[in-house]
Image (cartoon, rainbow, N blue to C red):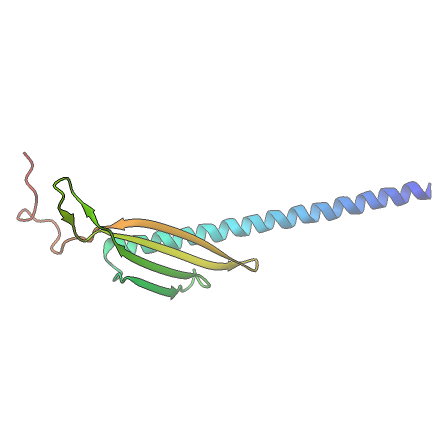
Length: 135
């Protein structure tokens, strides 16, 4: 009888420890998911700022982000892309922009990158004088 009770307590203790590990793993997964969503938002915000022309783009820039993205480091890299059109003429002004975001998580460094191409807008915006006529 004592042996059966000891065995039952041991099985119960193992079950409780296993359940604790599962809960810990779930909490860790939720935290990583939230950090990933925050990182995506930081990258999307910077992408929109660059696309709209609100941020001056240099060849390489590294900065620590402010709250709500505190603890994250954003590295921006711009590289000129050399492409030619169908007439074999060089197309000027196209850049490959890489946004690389790093942040510490559970003692490890996490990284998320976004690569996009940028063709800077011409000054003056749309007007009938610089519009291309359609036939």
